[in-house]
Structure formats: structure tokens, C-alpha cells
Length: 419
RNA sequence: GGGGGAAUGUCCCGAGUGGCAAAGGGGGCGGACUGUAAAUCCGCUGGCGUACGCCUUCGUAGGUUCGAGUCCUACUUCCCCCA
Image (cartoon, rainbow, N blue to C red; front, side, top):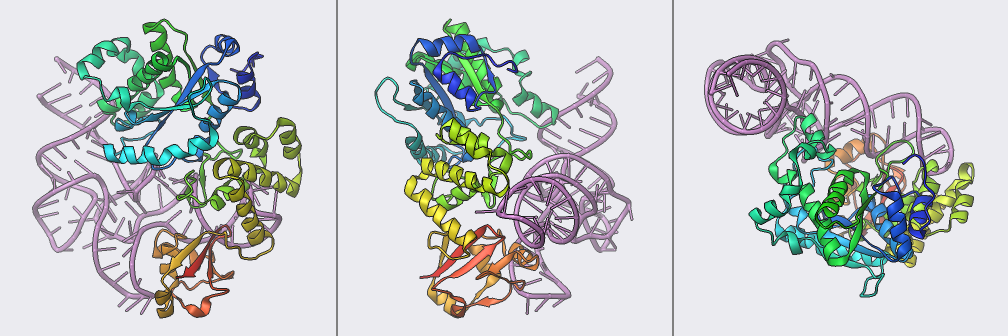
């Protein structure tokens, strides 16, 4: 991994120069396979929430690169595996989701892929499959006989996902223990159904991926490869993906395009180049120019990054609106109607609303108590004026141009509108 | 099967003589400084109430006590030793 092989295939070159590669199981063989013609590769996504979040973006972008390089991406929705739950990186078992919840999540997640990939029936068109299709059909004994024989407990215990749990003296159920078998079987099924020979994923998935590679090589004597991406953290060591206000969801109804734009705009200086290579289609020389900007000028690069990333997910119009709102709010101190808003019945406002309650309802604080503490710390502002008394009652007199501008900190802003 | 130890603030680690909303970190949030950056410094970090306050928290369920995270019993899960 440390010695960088010079790849010949366009795909692996692209992956390498843009920084997606952490580990590859058989680099030279995979390179040759990519050179020989279009390959099929997949990444699995479990349906644990009703939207994917920025942490999944690197995987989505990888599938995009794959297609750009003339290969066929398979998006695997984990309708079956989600019923079991991936123990990787979990300290303890998560509550199990019902079939209905899982299906609802899958329905809600799917749409974003259409923004990044071209689906269809052509040789390099993306396809989406659900592993419930085969996993749900296995009988227990059949599954054990067909696949269980290929896995030893000795080896399974050596994988990090299991070892971590044991080291922390946390219970791991037999159900969870089977997750890696299921993921391996997924790979095998996709190899048989679609000729898929490469599984990609985050570095935490290495163990699960390697198991699938070995299963295919052993059972079908076919070539199979695994590729993982580096664990994404910011330059100062924080885990990427959280932002002011929690998880950065990809679905617009859970995270507005404005917030999504803000997430990228707030990138640390040292990460700008790396993120542009990973999360945008900007040409490399352009990125090199932008990331070399010094001091405050690098803010221009961050805007380019935010625009490009937001355009990919939400479209150009949304990206421009987000930028315009941000410029107005931060650079000119003005209001923009594109800022996130919260609607309140006009009657309530006429009767008077306690600030702490309003701030909590509008999503600026998790509770009234938190809103009070926020105010006492000087972090709550009403129409740009810090308000330390959260018990104050707001009314129609506080409307400015028809709205009340509420802010928690400098970046979380909500426009309260009477309706 | 027997013996010993452990589970703490629903993010994590972690102290805790019977009077505890519970030390200290990390993380998170806010403030100052900046460039909507990083680093640094300061404050906050269970819920509800304007407030004296009320409610809910220390694996689960009971018990002793004026009072229990702290003592007792049973159960659950984990670790170690013996068989």
C-alpha cells in the first residue's frame, strides 16, 4: 500500500490520483482486469436510516468514478443485511428495524443515486439490486451447508469487527456474528448474477470484503477483488460528517441544500484540495490552483468546493441559491429568503411566544433548557441582537420585514414566519 | 457445576465514605480571537417551570433505611480462576 504501483487502467489511475485508495486485495490483477474491458463493481448500503449522509459520499463518488472510467456500477441496497445489522464499529447491538421500516428507508434512500449515476440496461449503465432478493430465501440448514462450511470460527474471531466487541467486553449476538457471512454471500451472488468482480467500501469494511473475495475464489474459482477507501477524517483529526446541527443527511427534506452547502463551505483549509478531488468532478489542475491559495483567499476555493458538491447532489439552481443566501447572510449581513425557515401560526405569535420555546421548536436547541443555557452564554440572537433572557416573550412587534431572524451561534439561522 | 470481579450521567472513557443531578477527561455546543478555517483561551453540557422548586437518571426487579449509585436478595450480560 505504501509503495504506489503505477496503474495502467484508467479507473485505478483515477482512483489513485484522486485519493480513493486505501487498500486493494490484488492490485496488479485488478489493474489488468480493468484494462481488459468493462468490469462490474459494487458497493453495499444498509438501510438503517431514511437517508444516507455525507459519510457515504465517498462511496457514491467511487461508483461515479467507476462509471466515468467506462465500467458498470452496481448499487446494492441491504434490504436483507439490515435485518441483521452490521456490527462493524458498533459498541453494542442496535435495535432491530422492522421489515416495514427497512423498506421505507430503502424507498427514501434510492433517489440520490440517480443524481450521481446513469441507470439503465446498457453495458456501463448502473443497476440497483436488493440483497433481500436472495438472503430472504435461504433456509437455515441450506445456508449453513452451502456457505457455513467455508468459514472457520477461528478466522472470524480474528476480524476487527468481532475482536473489538470482545475486547470491550461487550456481548455480540450470534445474529450479528453472521453479518460477515451474509455480506460475503452478497458478493458471490452478484458475481454469479452480474459478473461482478470487485467490491468497494470503507476501510472498516476490509474484513467483510476480504471474506467475500475469498469465498468467490474458493467456491467458484473466479477472480474477485476488494478495494477500500481511507477512513475520512478532517485534517485536525475529527471524524468527518458531523456539522453544526448533527448528521449531514443527503436527502433535501432532512438537510436543506443551504445547510449542505454550508457543510462544505466550512471545510478546514488543509482539507480543501483533498475534498475537491474526492467530492467534485473539478479537473485536477484547477484543484491544484485553488488549493494553493493562501490565507483568507482560500475561502474562494471553499466556495467552489461547496458549489460543486451541492450542484452534484441538489442541482445547480439550489447551489446558486445557497451561495447567494450565504453571501447575503455572512458577507453583507442581509436576509435572504433562501435561509431555512420555520412557520408558526400567526395567532400564536400575536398571543406571544416564549423565546426559549420558539428556539427549541425551530430546531435551534434540543430543549428549552438548552435554549436557555445557549442564551445565557450569549449564543442566541434575535434579529442579530444577542438575547440573554430566553424567557422573553416574542410577538408581532419583533417581526422585521415579516419574519423574525433567530440564530444559534453564527451559523445556525432560522427565519420564523407567521402563517 | 463452584469461586472471585465488573456494569455509572441513554456519545465515549471514567471517579464515586449511605445525604448525589453525581468528580475528572474526551466529544459536542456557545463565546472571544480570526477568514463562516485551524490553533488557543473562556463558558455550557438530564427534563420541565419566570423563580424558592418539581420530575427522571448509576444493568433489571425487589428489599433494608428518615434517606441508596453506594448495603442485602434474585435475575441479565461480560471478565478471571477452579472443575
